[in-house]
Amino acid sequence: MLLVLALAVDIHLPAARSLKDRRAVVRPVLDGARHRFRVSAAEVGYQDLWQRARLGFAVVASSQGQATEIIDEVERFVWSFPELDVTATDRWWLETD
Image 1 (cartoon, helix red, strand yellow):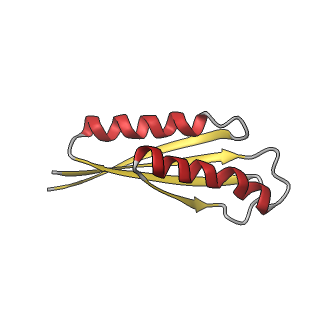
Image 2 (spheres, rainbow, N blue to C red):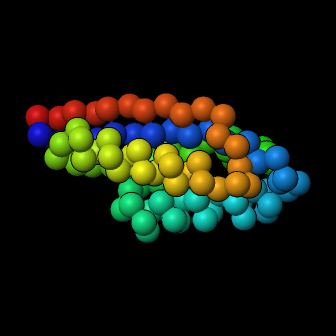
Image 3 (tube, helix red, strand yellow):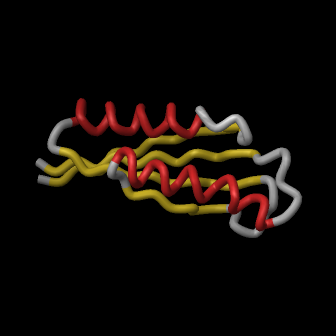
């Protein structure tokens, strides 16, 4: 069985005064998650706003426990950035036979 767990994280960037400021915070989060946890990561919403972003992460695993553990680590990683505030998180499962 193939399991996919997706995580969406809405963030607020209070110090961002331009899209360039915003990218300077968002890029290390996405690149760090890709490199450290081997997940897919992308900016998936609010690209035109300076102080708001929605980040999406996904992991493919053979067990629910493994997928949950990885996404839990990704979520803690995002929370570890002091220059952003997490405002909401959502998770979705996709299961195939």
